Image (cartoon, rainbow, N blue to C red; front, side):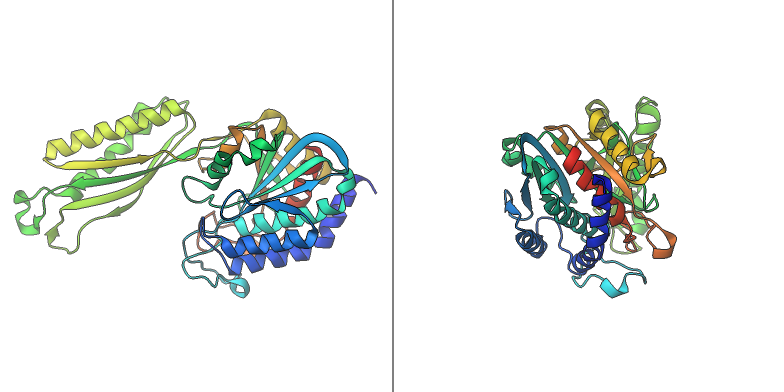
Length: 395
């Protein structure tokens, strides 16, 4: 039995345990930076495997597997462990539905965590094949700024371990089980958050001329903001400006004092990011001044863009081919406008982020990330775990 065959055989052996772990974590989700019980589960399983770990942050941990082949080589395998602040829906998941109201694993982090724990089991069985050290990064807070990836990098822990390369994984409802998708270069956008308040003058709806209507002003701004990408950004650059939430007013016949809006800006370059921030300010200033209103804009810069190193991205695809055949590896043509705090690691180390297919109609798992009916096809583990192990051994 060659090494690839052994990895896949061990995956089959531990497959049901990965499924069971994922379903347990799914029932007890914890939101960003509050993953205390999740961390206990992770540490307990690492203890059972005899894997030493350190805790640079309050939640999460980093497992350390030392191979029998001594070397300066250090490869890190990263997963995220937090859930979203939302409630879930869906018939297929009823047997392992979230029991924690206001928290749900509707982005697949429960599967990511179970998968890395499964990879840890396999790597523990293959210590004689490990050259140097494999780090298992169980990271908190991917879903909330400033990002657990940033906080972990700020501790200097991984830098002190002299990591040579780092790899991160994500479920993909857009791809079927058994497939792996990534690309070198830009893979995911930098997501910023914006919060805007339009400050008008309240009054009676029947005497609108005596008021300064922030709802009308907000609608003018929302429409104008959509011209930023179409008229101010180089068409060869990718960018998105979206207002996703708006609040204002209390009754049908009252003009409110103010309206609040929340949105996101997605870019790949700091120049484009800066241009959009300036245009938002300019539009808000012009539109509000012309109406006799005021405004307040809070622009929160989020995660950097995920930019995959060429060597590591190619290794992910080549490893997928070696394990599962050429048809399993999908080299993406375009990046995604979603964001990921894996980008913080890439500011320090060569690395690659990649997607593993988890979507199928029969398991109702084709809903997009953050949808209340989001689910993961269990066959995800049959591809994700072997690939993580192979990268740990050869990355």
